[in-house]
Image (cartoon, rainbow, N blue to C red):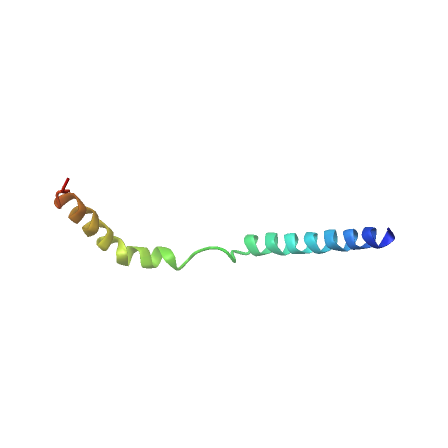
Length: 61
Protein backbone atom coordinates (compact mmCIF):
# COMPACT_ATOMS: atom_id res chain seq x y z
CA UNK A 1 0.00 0.00 0.00
CA UNK A 2 2.88 2.35 0.71
CA UNK A 3 4.10 1.89 -2.88
CA UNK A 4 0.88 3.51 -4.12
CA UNK A 5 1.51 6.57 -1.95
CA UNK A 6 5.08 6.84 -3.19
CA UNK A 7 4.03 6.53 -6.84
CA UNK A 8 1.20 9.01 -6.35
CA UNK A 9 3.58 11.51 -4.77
CA UNK A 10 6.15 11.08 -7.54
CA UNK A 11 3.50 11.48 -10.25
CA UNK A 12 2.18 14.68 -8.68
CA UNK A 13 5.71 16.09 -8.42
CA UNK A 14 6.39 15.26 -12.09
CA UNK A 15 3.06 16.81 -13.13
CA UNK A 16 3.87 20.01 -11.22
CA UNK A 17 7.33 20.16 -12.86
CA UNK A 18 5.82 19.83 -16.35
CA UNK A 19 3.16 22.44 -15.53
CA UNK A 20 5.80 24.90 -14.32
CA UNK A 21 7.86 24.26 -17.48
CA UNK A 22 4.76 25.00 -19.56
CA UNK A 23 4.09 28.26 -17.68
CA UNK A 24 7.73 29.36 -18.16
CA UNK A 25 7.55 28.55 -21.88
CA UNK A 26 4.34 30.56 -22.33
CA UNK A 27 5.69 33.56 -20.43
CA UNK A 28 8.93 33.54 -22.43
CA UNK A 29 7.03 33.71 -25.73
CA UNK A 30 7.75 30.18 -26.89
CA UNK A 31 4.28 29.84 -28.42
CA UNK A 32 4.09 33.30 -30.02
CA UNK A 33 3.46 33.07 -33.74
CA UNK A 34 5.69 35.54 -35.50
CA UNK A 35 5.73 33.77 -38.87
CA UNK A 36 2.08 33.53 -39.89
CA UNK A 37 1.25 37.27 -39.92
CA UNK A 38 4.10 37.97 -42.33
CA UNK A 39 2.97 35.20 -44.67
CA UNK A 40 -0.74 35.99 -44.37
CA UNK A 41 -0.30 39.27 -46.22
CA UNK A 42 1.18 37.38 -49.19
CA UNK A 43 -1.89 35.15 -49.57
CA UNK A 44 -4.54 37.74 -48.69
CA UNK A 45 -5.07 38.72 -52.35
CA UNK A 46 -5.71 35.11 -53.32
CA UNK A 47 -8.41 34.83 -50.67
CA UNK A 48 -10.09 38.02 -51.88
CA UNK A 49 -9.94 36.87 -55.51
CA UNK A 50 -11.41 33.49 -54.59
CA UNK A 51 -14.31 35.15 -52.75
CA UNK A 52 -15.00 37.40 -55.75
CA UNK A 53 -14.93 34.43 -58.14
CA UNK A 54 -17.40 32.57 -55.93
CA UNK A 55 -19.77 35.52 -56.13
CA UNK A 56 -19.49 35.84 -59.91
CA UNK A 57 -20.18 32.19 -60.75
CA UNK A 58 -23.94 31.52 -60.63
CA UNK A 59 -24.97 28.34 -58.92
CA UNK A 60 -26.80 25.74 -61.01
CA UNK A 61 -29.85 24.20 -59.40
